[in-house]
Length: 319
Ligand SMILES: Cc1ncc(C[n+]2csc(CCOP(=O)(O)OP(=O)(O)O)c2C)c(N)n1
Ligand SMILES: [Mg+2]
Image (cartoon, rainbow, N blue to C red; front, side, top):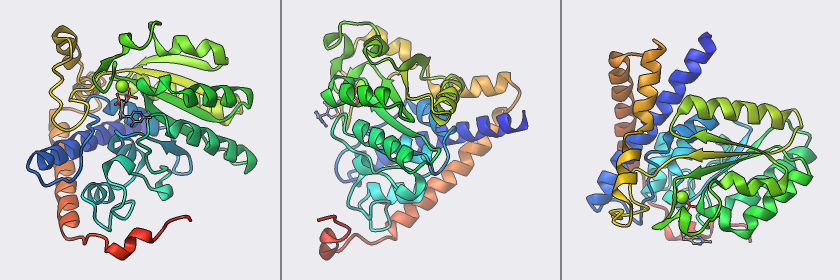
């Protein structure tokens, strides 16, 4: 029970870290200080936190253009994520990747791939490698609903199924691929309705509820580690912000938006933790302040870090 308490508190802390990290970088983006673009993960924090709470450092994840939530939840440090966003040499990819390529192999995160669906075969390959190496680890692929229209998604799932690979496919169904609503590109109601063709164990979960995500992921990790093969988890969720940059979501149905805005995963987590008498308002305030301090330290660290030199461009390349 004490372990459960600790896990729940740690998951909540991760969600707050992601939320505050993003509030900060978005503010700096609007101030014109952040180069490039930004794809916020706001509204989906319970998924990264709930899944990664079940993973060991040696388990690996792959991610997407919306990568910071996955990175922070998997244990890539706030400092190295912040520095990477700002292209500094102290970033997790030495400033060469930016927000869409966050990752750190030493933390068990393959640098994110922004090509939609790109991380799916990589996670499948990592799972295959674990079986060759006789390692009892699991690979997790995070991707959006849009990625399930890519051919490589279907090919990877079939291969993982026939070879019984220790891989977990986590579809974050936020109802949109950029500005396109899911109903315009998929005739079936749920993404898991597509899974029956692969014979993979699949489940739908409320992606805004960290405990539900955690519980389903726990089962999936146990199955994979017992050699029972892949699991597909469809997390129903919603982007609280635009797709990227200054997207105002003008294309979204206002009623749909209003409904989902009432389901803030951070508030849901607070209410659950209060109901379970695990944390109260003072604890939330304390966690907020502790995280705020870490974010401020990360900004200072970033601002004091140099940019890569032109000659670094050709370093760390595999040619
Ligand atoms: C192969 C490919 N096609 C198109 C794009 C442009 N693009 C970037 S993100 C995105 C939408 C992806 O939607 P989804 O997979 O649901 O992820 P979400 O943005 O909702 O997290 C698109 C079309 C891309 N990066 N890669
Ligand atoms: Mg989507």
